Length: 80
Image 1: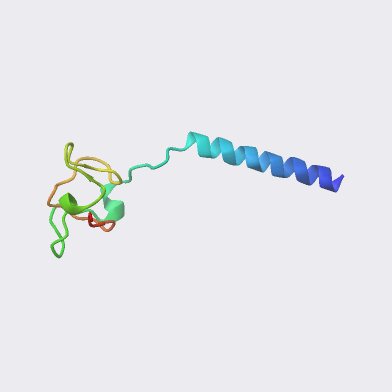
Image 2: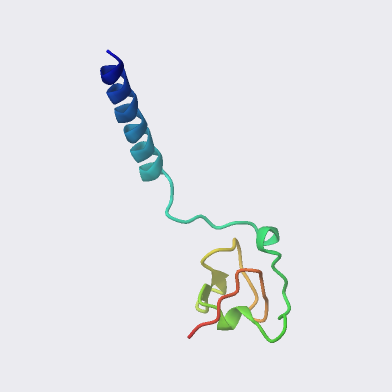
């Protein structure tokens, strides 16, 4: 019986994981304060040069709301 109950438990956990995964967005934007966003550049690093910046809407893929092209945050990742 232990094997059967273990299998049931593992199946339940797998299903729970699938349900959680399928109902959670692949990414969610976070508040600006989380990444210490500021409206000014830092050491020449600007949002306009970041891979997450969406120029057409002045938004970031990771940070909530409108961001300044001249801004900066901790997740800055320079475009190649």
